[in-house]
Image (cartoon, rainbow, N blue to C red; front, side, top):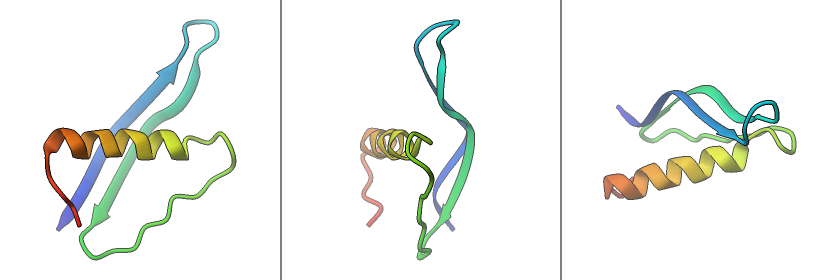
Length: 65
């Protein structure tokens, strides 16, 4: 069973021609009981992804753990 799922998640900062694509079409699926690590180089969007997922969880009003 999935406890978290995204499809084509995007987050852009700025305006043309200086658009920064922090997240560009991220699809993520996390199953209950799984261990998930989010890794990448500095500036690759890890913190942006976690902030967006945290905001979504708060909006749902559900505790996943």
